[in-house]
Amino acid sequence: MTTRSSFEFPDQQRAALKKARRLEWIGIFYLLSVVVLMYLVQGNSQAMKTAWLEDLLSLVPPIVFLIASRIALRPPTERFPYGHHRAVSIAFLCGSLALFAMGAWLLGDAVVKLVKTEHTTIGGIHLFGHTFWLGWLMLPTLVWSALPAVLLGRLKLPLAKKIHDKVLFADSQMNKADWMTAAAAMVGVVGVGLGFWWADAAAAACISFSILRDGFTNLLQVVKDLMDEVPWKVDRSGPDPFPRRVAEYLLSLPWVAEAQVRMREEGHVYFGEAFVVPSDENHLSQRLERAARDCQQLNWRLHDFVLVPVTSLPRQEQPTP
Amino acid sequence: MVGVMTSARPRRRCMLGGPHLALAAAVPLWFAVIGCEMPRDPEGTWQRSQAEAFRVGLSSHPPWTDLHDGRPTGIEVQLVRRFAQRIGADVRWRPGAESELVTLLDRGELDLVIGGIKHTTPWSSHAGLTRPYADWLDEKPVWLVRQGENRWLLEIDKFLQASRPEIRRLLEGVNRP
Image (cartoon, rainbow over all chains, first blue to last red; front, top):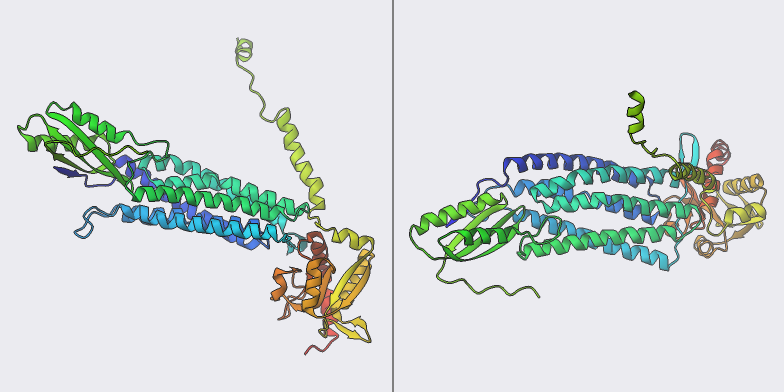
């Protein structure tokens, strides 16, 4: 017996999705302004270059989210009978791989500069009839690259939890951590201003390390998703207790002797099946139908659920060592 | 009863009192003091130049730079002399080929390299570039300074920017190829 809900999201979640999409659009335009400004003032500073690339890369999650959240909502077709939910994971895989590779490359770049004791040259700029140090323009630009980002990240976080979207969650986490990038780059610029040649490359190394770490955690996450790991909470604080709740519900039915549930995540939603050993086979089809429907009522995330009657449960999974 | 009500209300602590206020005042003050000195040179080129002399490498490239009987001449040479005069420093000249001079600059044995160098110079990864001082020309000539000597670079940039009318005059006086 199988049921599948016709829409990805209930009304409440759909409103959250709409809001999230709007925030991501605002985020993209804001990031574009940051990327242009940072490019104009980056000079020869490695820290500025690294922060600039990080800002450029942080365009990826919003774009992935906007594209994937559209594709994922497409209904199943004959060729894709399970729907298009995995689009989110695939897009996220590409994004985190880019982040990871770029972080590694930038870290190497910064370390080479430190080892070669390369002195960062930040010269003058002529604006409004005055010649002054370019570093003075870098500092306010870095402030602009951080403060609105932190605010956006804070606004996105509750929405990510609501629609159970890992891309949006990762995006909001990166936005929230943006002030650290900016602070590190500012320390680098001021350090160069005070005559410490290594300050710039050291700051760049810190920033690229944070890019590398972001890429790695996201990569790990999405690989686990694609490997059909059991559902986890969006904030990764632990496994989602929902499959257990479904099993408990099935066991509470008077006609069920034994039950076993397994679930996996595809994008925003859960797919899964349950094996039940009936103790009473009267009206079995109707009972299975009802039980499957009731299970889906427990949580909107349970999208595609199959109940299979068996004479004995299949072999239990080995616990993870 | 008004008095009772006010006394009953807990007094709100001022967010900008005590240590907060001190910090809020100290940070901009610190920046203002440090800021005047920023940027500083890691190797102290600007201070040394002011106190004694700076070393200029020049590769012959008329009309920007040239050698007449071993004596440096040319538009850029005149500009360097004027700059030295302004900061009260002596100039020590070192003629040579561009690549050789850039190596010396990189090693810290020169402070400045001139010779009609274009702003698209391949040396930009081995030297700091001034802003193009005559940006109305196609070649947009620049000078090279030792990497990381940001105060030194900024002072030269300021001088070149302020000398623009003079540079124009000097350029009118020569026939450029």
